[in-house]
Length: 205
Length: 75
Image (cartoon, rainbow over all chains, first blue to last red; front, side):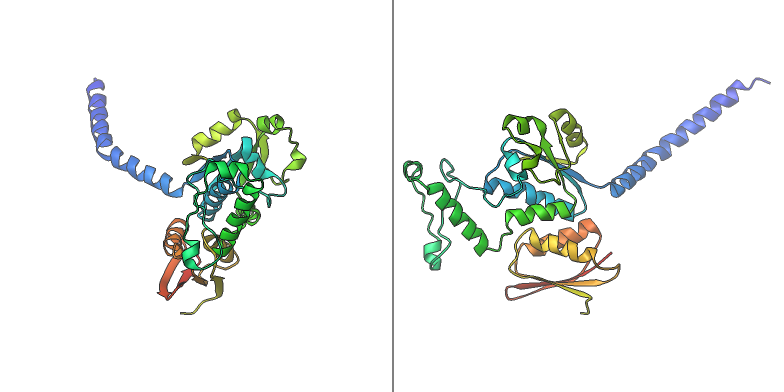
């Protein structure tokens, strides 16, 4: 008896059945994988001033609190944020027209004034940056904003991975002793990029 | 409402209320209830999102004056 027509028929039936049920099964499986997956985020931190220190640490600590896997790659001036003592980060309003300059003391109407000091004055008056930094710190203290050293500790507690860029460590003449020992590793872009590719969110700060 | 632990997050701003809550929850057991008091208006949405993401249950939340109260059940 010739078996081939029977096999062809069976194959056709199986194919038809697969076409019917596969799309739904695949959707269900994908949804299942998605639900079990841990979201992840990578951040590339390139700045070292007080105002730029907050975004990477706040985003990282919050994401970690939500259960995500987070890594921050510190490069260029971002390395400032890895130093052992970061209580001395500064801020400059010079050439920074987006920065509101309001006094953190006095009556409410006074506090509301945006002083808009011209760049020429800012550049000319010695100690202006230190003054602006002191005012910013007072403003943050008034509003109950967490200090940057504490925020970094919270990140470490929450399991955020801190990664240093070896190239810029060498470039700026740093050694690993300048930085906190909790830095996970020091590596280059080629090692970091695959991590970023796999992450759900990658941010450049 | 009854609770097993209280977290006073008054005067703390983003991201501290969430981070402190996470820490407090870690020290609690499944089913226990955490009572949080905060003054950060942003914390209302933050806690809702936090519960949605982490699977902890937000039993209730209320505002009285400048204070916001949350009851959260640890998953």
